Image (cartoon, rainbow, N blue to C red):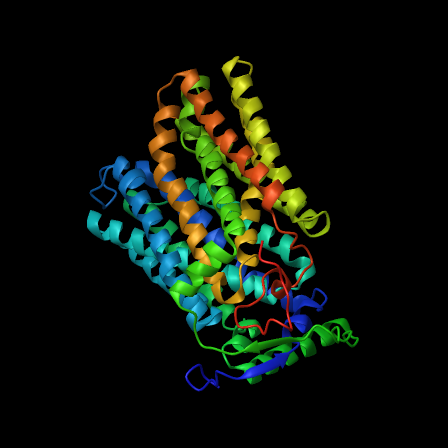
Length: 494
């Protein structure tokens, strides 16, 4: 049954969400993680590669008439603008057309734009396809987070989300190492190596696209949009695969876990806005605080980290990439090791503590830096400690906004807060922190650290008060679908 053929306006009762949430972890779930979660690696690869190849692109013989400032300035800004626009544009369509259709389309947009970036011969061409690359990536965040949360069982949702969002930093490490090889003129010509880095991103996207063909549409989305028979077939197929993997029958879902909904095809923008900013305004405040806090903390450190190492500690420009790789590893290990605690200890404790700890550690780093007590190695160690907690906290921001709003608004909510955080990081951040960390004055760099730390601590305090206890709870229990019949499913809007 297609979307056009779907019957809406009916009231149906189903236990599909409960059946998905009661599934034990299986090889099928790993297929979902690999097929959907690898987009963050591509994003990390893109961002890091462009920063590392800026110098090469500006050299004579690169095949592109562009300056280093245009690469790190205009091209980076256009990538950010594309990501923000793409998140909002595709986010709306993800809620309307479905998760699978959009996570295939947005990845195809990324693939094509990255491939066309690789054959750039003029500045305007490079700028255009950097924007379109971001446009595809921005849409990926909304479509992928929605699909993952709706397919992964409730008891694993927190750790899986954190691990996937943290994998951005695996891409960052890969981008750093790839750039070293691609920019080696003894291996590749000046006008070839940088093109191969973008071409590799397109090849990886093609592989992921092939894997995604086997990822089903979200049964939760199908159920709400009048395609309950298709949802039933998908869930039954998943259950059969999991039972075959485990060699034993699955336990029955709870008999009182049925959900009654009045099916409909779409929700208006007015209803989305009223739901997010009126009915769930405390949760919206939480989302604002988490995204702004993590965006400014990361900018306080990452904007000018190379300049800090070079200016204050005499680290050669060509060696700063090694320090960045160490920081990136610390960023990935945080969500990997702490993720399970978000499902066991709980969201409120872990979100607030990771934000507060990272903020306090950055305050401590600023104090030590101001006293001249650090060298390049110990400063990097301090940054790793800060980002170990900050990365888990930042990943939990994406987890939070993807699970605390109703099903019908999920992708648009993710898109809105992602665009907010990306804009703060890509627009406000450079304006503020690039100037502070680039002056060469200790006091200015200390101030940059303190601003990022303060906003992170404020966000942690907001989370301590407003964070939702969503651990091991079904999405429908955390936020009742707008289409749900009130007497059947109850969830307090806080």
